[in-house]
Amino acid sequence: MNSQVRSSTSAWKAGLGAGLLGLSLAVYASLQPGSKAPDFTTQASLGGKVFSFSLAAALKQGPVVLYFYPAAFTKGCTVEAHEFAEATDRFKALGATVIGISHDDIDTLNKFSVSECRSKFAVAADPDLSISKAYDAKLFLIGRSDRTSYVIAPDGTVIYTYSALSPDAHVRNTMDALEKWKTQQQAKPGG
Image: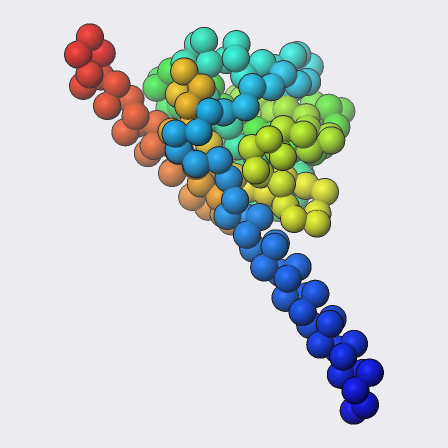
């Protein structure tokens, strides 16, 4: 192998390695507990009906479980939507609002909110990924959100963060974090 081919191969491997490292870091990058959750307002759909979702307004009602997912109607995102739909009543009993966010357009989300979210919780549009970027929930080099879930207290503080491409533990982990937070709130004087 001549030196020019070796140099080209080495540069390609280095670039691939850096790209894969960046991709893996993006999956684990997220706002940490104690961070202030960036406020946003965007179009959302619940039961196929479009409305304006405001994080600030939702937080006035109680904690918010905010989860980012790559794309509506994909296998993992459908599984995750079904699991959040099944758990929505338990989240509501704890005073929490659930909202999913993806890069999908609102027409796609209208369909997804009915068929996969079962009209139980809203899904919001982030077509330019500005919300995903603000929450450090954008996949590196890919025009989609990663799978990151947050629990946000009514004062706007992130109290829990979980990032994993597998949808398996997002509902359980956010529910556990919310229950723990609720117990701590009730134990406070005047709680």
